[in-house]
Each structure stands twice: as structure tokens, then as C-alpha cells.
Amino acid sequence: MGKITISTLDKMKAAGEKFVCITAYDATFARLVSDAGAETILVGDSLGMVLQGYDSTIPVTIDDMAYHTACVMRARPQSLVIADMPFMSYTTPEQTMAHATELMQAGAQMVKMEGGTWLSDSISMLVERGIPVCAHLGLTPQSVNAFGGYRVQGRTPKEAKSILADAVEIQDAGASLLVLECVPAPLATDISAKLDIPVIGIGAGAGTDAQVLVLHDMLGLSEHTARFVENFMEGQPTIQGALKRFVEAVKSGEYPREEHTYT
Ligand code: KIV
View 1 (cartoon, protein in one colour):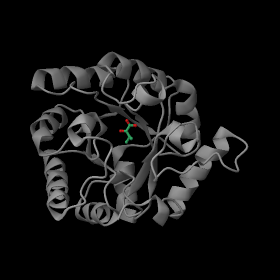
View 2 (cartoon, protein in one colour; view 1 turned 120 degrees about the vertical axis):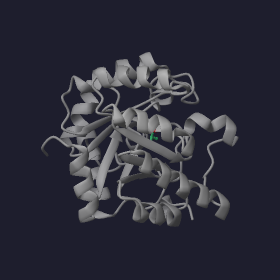
View 3 (cartoon, protein in one colour; view 1 turned 45 degrees about the vertical axis):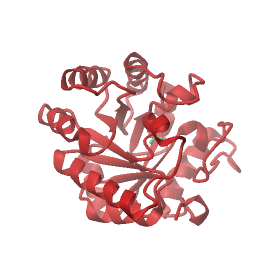
View 4 (cartoon, helix red, strand yellow; view 1 turned 180 degrees about the vertical axis):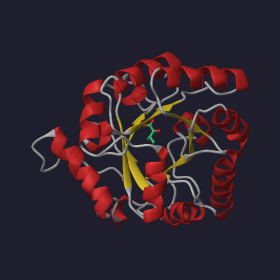
């Protein structure tokens, strides 16, 4: 795999080829994930839960994100590296610009922000200044308290319509990628077909352009996992084997299956 860029991912979408994203937070796992052939690495704020032991992503700071992004980049991965903007780090234009700059200077190649229409101006501002953006819709974990728990989003026609409208608007604002988390599969399939930009699904069925899983979940290390998670360590003697198995399963369409999907 050569160095992956956003145009690689655009071409893969156009050709109907699935691509893979796995979270990583340090140099060793970034190397393994890249060697396994995952086109993208997400330095996710899920690190608050899987590394730091919190029960949400809310306590994660911009310093945490910059530190782990720099650790990942020292592996010089071939994968495109996306770093999460943490909770409340993108509420004003000045703060958004300063924090996105911090992550890019730590080595990230794109930043990810949770939210829809209200983010349009921030997305345009960053993109116009050379910072590519991945948006995140559906179950946005930083809003867990507003949702009243980690619940599937977009189940009613009104919610589904609003997520689709948000997706179109963030694309128009200049986002390069969209993560769609925990939404019914038909909605995710519809959004992926309507958007030109690649859509990465998690708990969103098999109809998206790519799949992402949290590293610790797919290695069977997490205490509690959602129904869309498969333990890829099962039957694999090594972590490298499990990572490759996940990459192959996404590319061949074996993962996700019906049992991983919300309808
Ligand atoms: O923080 C994270 O790891 C994420 C993924 C669950 C998409 O946002």
C-alpha cells in the first residue's frame, strides 16, 4: 500500500471499492494497522474510554489528542491519519482554528468534528485554510448526555431526514469524509449513495463506503461492546492476523453482517 491520500479514498468510492479505518493511539499499533492495509487511522477520542478508563469521551483534552496524534505519526504510517477534535474544542471560530492547528502540527492529515449543520461555517473556515475535515453524524458520543445514552439515531422519518440534510450540508461546506455512527442500515446506504464524499460507517450496516472499528473492541479487549462489534481475534493467533482479517472482511463484504446491523 502506497501513501494514502484523500484522492485515493475518492477513487476507491468511485470504483465501489470498500476501505478500512481502525483507531490507533500509539506508534506500535499505528504501524500494525498500517501494515495490515487499513487505508485510514483514526486517533479517536475513544481513547478516553479505552486508554484512560473514563466512561465517555467528554474528559478528553486537546493536549491528550495532540500527544496521541504525535505518537501515531512517529510510526510514519502509510494510512491517512485523522485526529478527533475533543469535546468543546470547537465552539468558537478562534478556538476551532487554534485546536485544529495543534492537531495538524502534531502530524494529523485531517481533523474530525461531531455535528451537523451548525458546523458548516467551521468546516468551510478550516477547509479554506488548508485543513481537511471529516464530519461525524448519527450517534455522536460527545453528545451522550443530550441523547440520554448511547442510542441508535435516525430511527424516525423526521430524524432520518434531518441526518440526511446535515450530511448534504456538511459536504457542501467542504468536508472530505463523513463518519456515520449507529444509524439504521437503509439510512446509511441512502446517504452513502447520495453523497460524493466517502462515508465511513460504524454500526451503520454494509452499505457505506468504508467501515471503522475501535481497535480495542475489534481485538476483543473491551468489557462491553455494541452489537455491531465483531471480535476479530477469535481464531487468530496474533494481533497482526486479527487486523488483517478485519481489513479482508470489510473489503470482501463479509463484515458487517445482518446481526451487526440496526434496521
Ligand atoms: O473516537 C472514536 O474512536 C470514534 C469512532 C468510534 C468513529 O469517533
